Amino acid sequence: MNTPPKLRVEHLSVQYSDGTESLRDVSLDIPPNQITVLFGPAGGGKSTLLRMLNRLNDLVPDVRVSGKIYLDGEDITRPKLNVVALRRRVGIVFAQPVALPMTIRQNLTYGLELAGQRHAGRLAEAIERSLRQAALWDEVHDRLDEPAAALSGGQQQRLCLARVLALEPEVVLLDEPTSGLDPVSTAKVEASLQEIKQNYTIVIVPHSVQQAGRIADLAAFFLQGELVEAGPGRDLFVAPRDQRTEDYVTGRFG
Amino acid sequence: MPPRERTQHLIFAALTLAAVLTVAPIVLVVGYIAWLGLPAIRWEFLSAMPREGMRAGGIWPAIVGTLYLTLGTAVVAVPLGVAAAVYLSEYAPDNAFTRAIRLAIINLAGIPSVVYGLFGLGLFVLFLRLSTSIAAGSLTLAIMTLPVIISTSEVALRAVPQSFRLVSFSLGGTRWQTIWRVVLPQALPGILTGVILGLERAAGETAPILFTAAAFFLPRLPDSALDPTMALPYHLFVISTQVPGMPIHLQYGTALVLLVFVLSMNLLATVIRSRARARRQW
Image 1: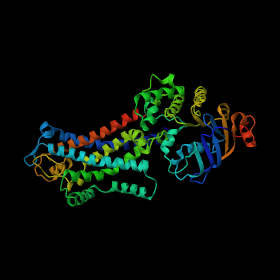
Image 2: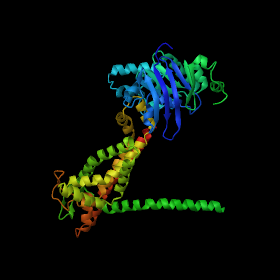
Image 3: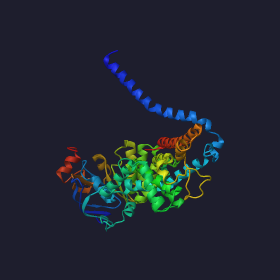
Image 4: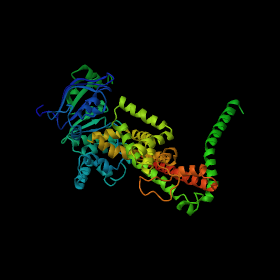
């Protein structure tokens, strides 16, 4: 790859306090403006890696981390890093859509206001842009001041995506964002990911191999904390190099 | 009737009886006090100073005094108690130090109220030279009320879903922003309920103010926080045991006013709680 990676993971190992090893010596380059898919059976360490990328693992007590992660060449594993600033650059959407107990509008402006943005025009701009990017604008633009909890599950998940996009992060992490959604909502989310990848770097843990195959520019297969192989999606799903990847992709286990 | 069904009926009857027995004393107490006290409730009784050695006139200074003491308790105990609860729920790591704090709070709740009174006398009245005053009484009541406020507030804070905090952090929220904008507003109804229940207890206590704030009789209202004050519970004690020839309906009238004061706080707490529950989005 010619362009420098947006994120570079180097020899990353993560161990939780109960002794379980979540990641073992993982190294991976994540290119900008592409969809990188982390896939594999449950317990493979995909979510752990995702939460290392914006330091949400800081909230878990007694995690042992070795190795480094670089964002645009800057070490983001160092203890003195400003994690608040990092999380504005690296946003995350969780598997369960969690609407904050506020209106739709307040959900969207929450992050910006925390960052000190008070300008009403800018906030309105961000609301419309992010809702359009998340393919939700048409459904909610005339009821922005209703409680976000009134939205359907699929709408809430797109709201969560919009809420992250409103902050204009550089990287968007998605942890099984469509696991609770119907096929129509899933298609909408996938379509908006294709749409926004020109402006963002996207790292996603898909909820199925099929989804991984559909959206991956780059795919990385994780098994029990190890990165088995990584490569362009079109190669990896057609002709995996590793037998374990092939077994998983063809549905022999998992 | 088959034996199994008969057992069923018997148990049902026993449980109903138990429920009725727990409600009966409350109804009896309130009914009895209202029956004997209502004849005393006139505008003069609520708004005038006591006269003729408290055997006539009103209980206005005792009402005002109880309001002052409750307010003073709130001013001290609410910020301190809520702050302590936020610390315990949102910041405190689980270690020996915080376990000691929790243990202290539990033990604080178990101390008899008269001991608080004695402690208040020693610390606030004598050592800090606040004399027998609203300030000393409020501080004493505040210390007594703190465990209730801290533990109910902590429960309310912990009930706010962890996922809200995670989302707030993930959107670049600091810990304090997360508490201030998400956690506290969601916990507020629960905190208020605890605060009111704590203050309600403070308003009705006699022993803690016995040595620290209460006056037997004052010819005028207190005009500063450093003045002693009359108060409903202590006034009730005085006119029931210390004044010979006291008209009985004045005693029960005073008890009724105190009861209404405390029960209306209780009602307020219930209303806040049920309204918040109806509105809650989680």
